[in-house]
Image (tube, rainbow, N blue to C red; front, side):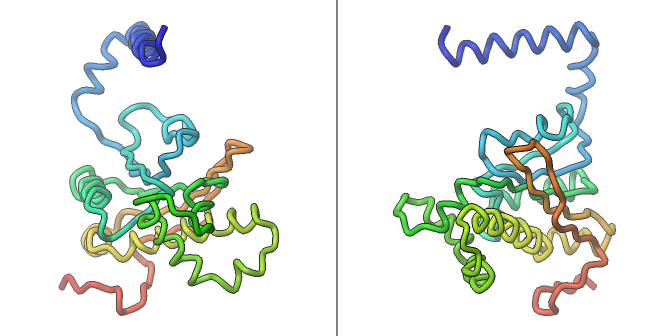
Length: 210
């Protein structure tokens, strides 16, 4: 059996199991989605949002890209964010990075890897902001882990800077922003930062909606 055929067979098995448990499962699922969470995660195949959080289809709205970035020129990400916040009205937005992230590792090198270099420059900028701290870390793996944490923190800050989040904070006092790190070696997630509508940003980033 070819690999893609195995996926199709797995799908049929999964569908049959769900129907056996609840004959109306897919009818209910098809009505609408009302997720509590938007998950902005890394594209890494080892960090599937539903698997690591043990959630069912319909519970998490998901956007993934290399190194779980929130880039203000990324119309794809911004469209997902706007839909999740304004239409789905999610009360929580999660940015989940993971230790051992290949994107973060690559950002610490000078390798030419094509268009990905342009994307990873955003992480290099974070390195520049925290260069003194990071240069003091001699162990390379520990340095990558710390940059991974700093990257998640910066992406949460990037979310808070968007007009989408600030307007929703102003009008609805939601969502809460969560910065998480997933550990590939333990399967555990830890929260390293969170922000909500009471967060005070630097004045230069604040938008006046009055």
